[in-house]
Structures are given as C-alpha cells and as structure tokens.
Length: 68
Image (cartoon, rainbow, N blue to C red; front, side, top):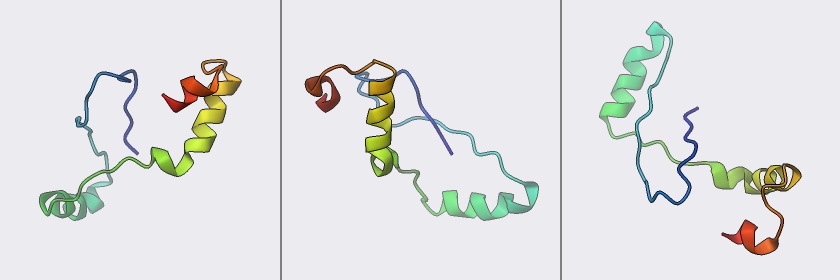
C-alpha cells in the first residue's frame, strides 16, 4: 500500500513511493516495475467510506464541500 497526504489542491498527479518486500519477492517486483507496472489510486473504490469518515470527524459539513 502506498499513501499520500496533505496535498489536496496542490495539483500533483505523480509522486514517489518505496516498495518494501521480502527478499524472495524482490526479483518479481523489479521485473513488474521494469515492465511498466503502474500504481493506480483505488480511493474511488471506497469513496463513500472516506466521505462518511470526513463527515464524522466534522471536516465536511455541507454537500458542496463533499462535492469539491
């Protein structure tokens, strides 16, 4: 799992991540990355849960804030 935090509205679309893996799996992941494997966001897969968490923590208080 890779994560990013604190960059909302900064316009960044790419970043760096470090993959820590068991030495026995290193060659497998090196081959995948060298072949062009790309990490894609899965935030949208759980968007309702994330929005609810923001509401519960009172970071979102109006529908227009959630839409943004």
